[in-house]
Amino acid sequence: MKPAIKFVNQDHSKFFPTLRERVNQYFKENNTTRFGNREMVIKSVSLLSVYLLSYAVVLLLPINAWLLLPFAILMGISKAGIGMSVMHDGLHGSYSKNALVNKIMGNTIYLLGANAFVWKVQHNVFHHTYTNIHGMDEDINTKVVIRLSKHAPLRRFHRFQHIYVFLLYSFLTLHLIVNDGMKLINYHRLGIVKKLKSSASKEYIRLVGFKLLYLFCTIGIPILITSLLWWQVLIGFVLMHLTAGVILSTIFQMAHIVEGAHQPLPNVEGNIENAWAIHQLETTANFSRNSRVLNWFIGGLNFQIEHHLFPNICHVHYKKISKIVEQTAQEFQIPYNVKPTMMAALHSHIRMLKVLGTTT
Image (cartoon, rainbow, N blue to C red; front, side, top):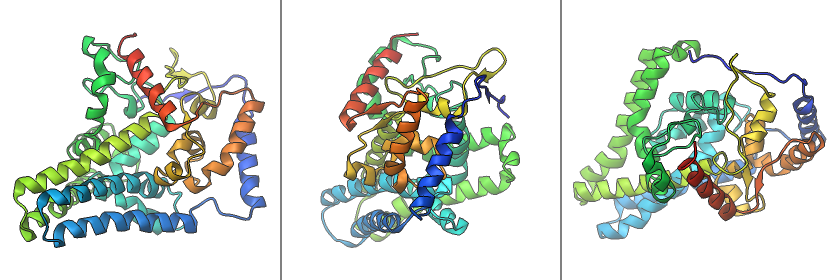
């Protein structure tokens, strides 16, 4: 296993116990569940329908291949929406109080070509526990020519990363298709697979099986049953993934790689001298909280602070409990990092990429 990092707060902050009590009281007073509701069901059906109907159009409509490209883009947009608004809550166990429903919704990750077990280890375990900590949070690992951590080695070409980064962001889901296997091998070597009460053989079989099934459905079937040429199918496949990849990558980065989001390192004893909940506020940012369309499509990931503090609460509740979180943070004099609009968050991310590309 990776060396354990402990969160130590010598002041024994009462922030999170106070906040948790207030949030629990909110659900009690409003007689509502912390899980998904009718809005969540409608959203899930809508996004899955757009994805599947677009796929059906590609398979069934005998039209010019170039006229099918908008449907490939639409599949990519809905694929990103499914990942952020359906799969995300499912794999966090916050979609429903029914474990089977959570599993089914979480398994929509296979529509992205990714793997549920690998995602849960990387995201639920490492990212949510050790947010923005170099060497622990894999989301800020240096991706060859993308430097997302100020503690990573700085190369001369990084000074241009704010220019080329979004092109590389678009390869996210394509990267997941081929890289999940390497991650699983690493997690097995570190003993994580066993610690999570699974077996390497089962996870390897599931990973390979679902990826082959995904590739057969998205590449093999269109080649076999339509008049499209193999290279036309590949163009549509890549375009779909590039669309999904740039949306997913950009949204996630605007929550952690922005101005005001810290990147602390553990001390010589391996401890972060902060309470875990306060660490989450100091390493995370919200953006565009008043956009109903954005909040609907990206699964409340513009309320990333609330999500990191309460990943077991469905995202449909984040907007309302954000008022409680912000007020409590102010009472305890803890920063609550908010970018007013999506463009403000995007510009902040670009400025941070420039800093990370030039500063050690």
